Length: 140
Image 1: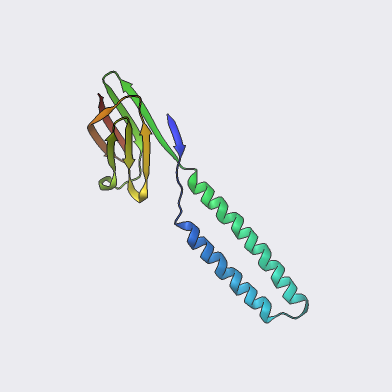
Image 2: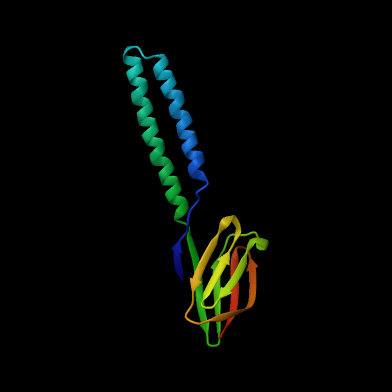
């Protein structure tokens, strides 16, 4: 089995940044409203702590979403090559293109991976069931 890094979920980044900005704005407004003495200083310190804590947590979340691996196996069967891979669906979004030695696999949610094979191939058969794509190709 071989694996490569996934591109990750980039849609969460703007939403997380917006949420952090709103939280920070609310706390800063409270701090400015109570800008007298110890309470104002305490609110600003709590704001800074919460802000950095959530930045760290959001980064962990985004890093964890990128760690999903593209798991696939290439099987050389003499005149044929088979690829078995985990690809996100739905079934109508899964597509395979052969471009010489390159195979482009597309799936749901913007999923796209390119594999480079040792031989030029032509697509013979493709099946997709329960998130597993099986492709059989003939060597040229």
